[in-house]
Image (cartoon, rainbow, N blue to C red; front, side, top):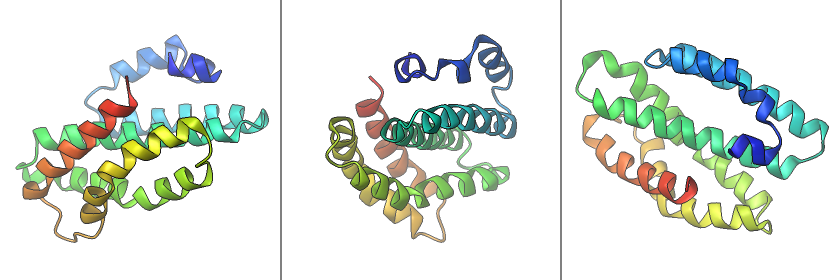
Length: 156
């Protein structure tokens, strides 16, 4: 629905959706597919000079990536094989500074104002994770709570 409202539904056609569903549980495959869809949608947005909407797509992609990665990690937080997931979540959390810049760039836009309010509530937690070189199982619960709250405010 969001893709349709933004006019980029072609990036998320039925074939893409089938492949994405088939890739559930395969994080690497999902990352590649989401990246391809994002790039296709971004090209469409840039070609139509709809940069504010393209920015919303970036923010949405970041939030969904953080949300999904955090949920995957939470279910495996004590698994020694989850080191890669910890790094992925840490990378998303570390990107919060870029999210802040984007929110500030379009601060007069009504959609960005709403996102800014929701993001601000989670920003301190994201910053703590980004500056924590020992991010591990004891930290994931606090991050998960903040990410779930942010996600719930944005995705209605």
